[in-house]
Image: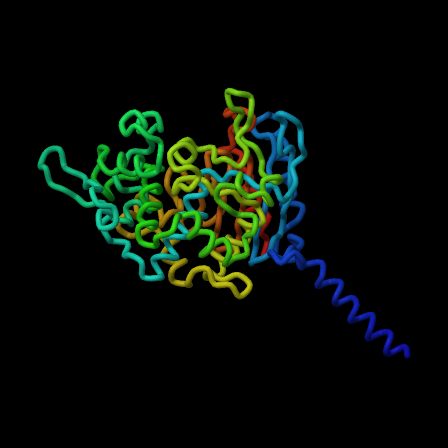
Length: 406
């Protein structure tokens, strides 16, 4: 009898221990930092840094997620989800407007999936898919250089950074996606492709239109079916205002002239006014935990818990800076070591780490060498567009990196 009780006790202890590391909602396993080789005391210093940013009114609140070796080693909510028109505390499951992080989470991931499905070649000219899309023309020689899909993905196409919706509406007379793409097709190219890096929302709006021409689906539909649903990212979507089951968890962004706040409507003007939420440059809404799942997959050859979102070689190609633009530091959608990559901090791998940031205050970093990802979601534009997170991102990255001890 004693032997039987001892066996039962051992089995019970084993089950109890395993239950501590498993997140039973079907998402990513949650573990203590020490279980994945991180020093909890060192890692906890991020709390002081983020709380100080809230105290200094740089951000109203935040959610931080840290992934190591495919497990969620740290997730915590700070401050408030809303401070206007009422104060609401932040929670871990809050859904944020990812702003330009949408470029990688939605557009680049979708383009990578379409690439491995045989939809196009990286060296294909854009005008193969978008008739009338103009090349770069050398002002001195008149020589034409075609813009390719890879040039859009690496922000080396020569397209300008942005254009105001007002400018497009004045020229085309209507605020719709076709008018915007038509305007981009013929606007001035500012440099020869691959000779310079200039971050451009117009590159990714063009990619959106290429994908839609090839697939016959909207970017929102394709990303949902081929990326978000495959990985079980159930709180990730475009046009969150139309999702009744999600809108209650969405963090508001900027206060509008009529006193309302943007809620579930993308903050970026081109994405909201011209593309009506389905846009290549912005428009994805997501949570820290969903992004942790994506990061875990990217650090595991495109696979998460038996679900293969991209092939191993696709992930390697997508996150490697092409030799043709090695000096520019941009991989296929991601930022490795361009001047925009300060969010990577100073301690993660200097060339293989990849990530992205969003205007609203979001960021994601993935270091495939240490198998670590840092996801920091804030909404610095709430209730007014005046907060700042550039320094905060780097400080948090450094603390997380310093906590890796094995």
